[in-house]
Length: 302
Image (tube, rainbow, N blue to C red):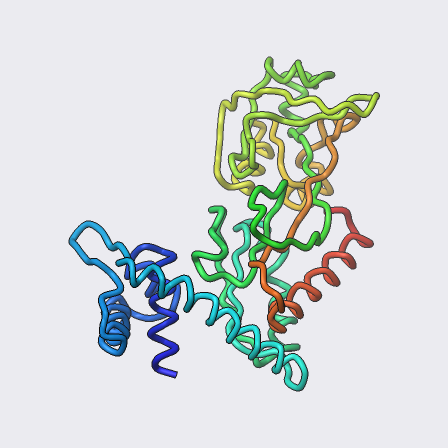
């Protein structure tokens, strides 16, 4: 198995371009990563990498070895996963990336249930609004809201995600309620920069035509909960995911604005690397997410 560790580390170094990132991906130290590569080069009797203080580049032999060993490792893992799927419960480390607010408010409560149901799966969940590179950073799957742009990944649609435009009753009493999306230019806007395109707010007219309204924010935050707090405080009009604003709407801290022109919902996807055989641990997680978010849709719209 030590030779497998060496080969996996070499593939990680090639795909991340550094010992530091490769060691993080493989869950070990920078020093251990360097030792594994040196051991592999010693076993093969060749130099796979050219090292300098500023760069790390493969030799011709290293590039050729990477192309072959990467596919062999993929085949090896798929073979093991397919055998485990036949006879065993899902097991092993499952690395997941999820957006911060959605992950902490909507996903996290269900992870306890999943962990109890599948005790042999080791959950490693990263909450980040950064668009992670699923393959290069070694994630088994990632949750993403909105249109998908990476055509190299497979995806499973989980549920729709509404966005709503809101403001506090106090703000609207003072400034008036806009009757059209063009009128937003006369208002103080609070921009959630986690949207894929935060500077254009979509609206659907009565003919079902989509309009994109350019906006300039008096305030902008990279956290939807802070945007909600600003809106509740009467500081302006915000566009937020409905699951963030739902409680404040129910309590009348904020009210919908331009609700008649609400844009079609975005979608929540589970994305994962392409493979001939999806690992059992990934499959049961994806099926679990489909079940919980489908059931949630029957109770409340996201």
